[in-house]
Image (cartoon, rainbow, N blue to C red):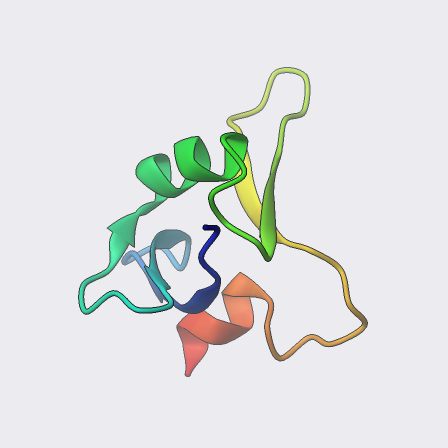
Length: 75
């Protein structure tokens, strides 16, 4: 069953470093969350891969900025 990202945490540079998945008590690091998203284990996010760039996690578009990872991490 896929989990949903409900919170995020930034590093000192302001980049998302970890996410909190629904039902978990601890944050999951970004690299593990990317692997999970690749396996469809996260319901509200996907991995973006651009040429010559590091893959990154992005929430699925739904018209709300409130649930974007950057917004979650700033709360």
